[in-house]
Length: 135
Image (cartoon, rainbow, N blue to C red):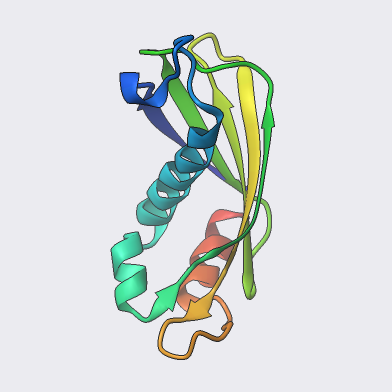
């Protein structure tokens, strides 16, 4: 298992009239966490795309436990539990400033060849990095 934490402060534009983060913004936090994780261990998402690979979302689930509040600093924890093949499954946990788990998500991406639009295996370089880090 590999996990990576990213900080995010809830801005005014994230919130509704009640001062809580709109439920539809949580998947964006999952994306922020996973792109930061990929950048920290391998390369930027831009570089991944420039190499001819795109990673569209195939599945998204979210479980809401408590609301995120305006100006609160959140911790986005992104977790990889298995080495990806063609599908890339990531889990997200979002914690508030008190350390309480407020949201959980799962996102499944597909490795797609940008030129053909067809599924492809995860790059060997990426899987080797994950194998080394998940020991």
